[in-house]
Image (cartoon, rainbow, N blue to C red; front, side, top):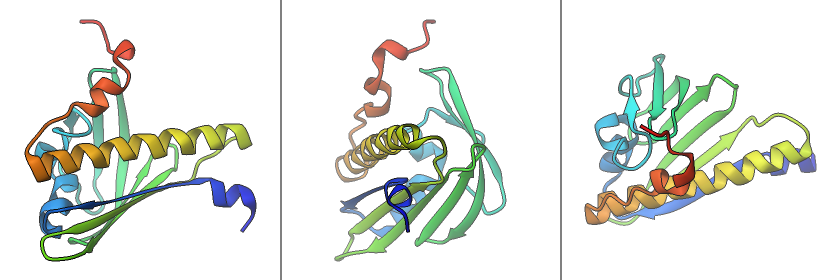
Length: 155
């Protein structure tokens, strides 16, 4: 593997003190996911389905294809730019789940790829922190919305 291949993958991980079924469902069910990540979705993640996610505060959306789902173990999606995101859910101690997220497939020159990896690592870290606060403490932190307040769409 070349050095560029090693740096072209973003990986973040965190322990969530909730059962794997609950943590997995938080990423599958947009009624939950919209509390810590995007604001709107065209539907649940289901194998073979095409879904749109919206971040209405920024006026942006992303289309994705659900490539694989292993119940309570793994989710793999592919965005239109051919980048992939893979979630892995590992039961830890009783009622704990270790979540690993890998974002791969970045394209461009070395500087572009490094910038994308840094952005992805920061973004998915914020997502996991928001999920942890929601599931463990029932707190909605608005982390994704508050990350770029100057970029909010004026209404």
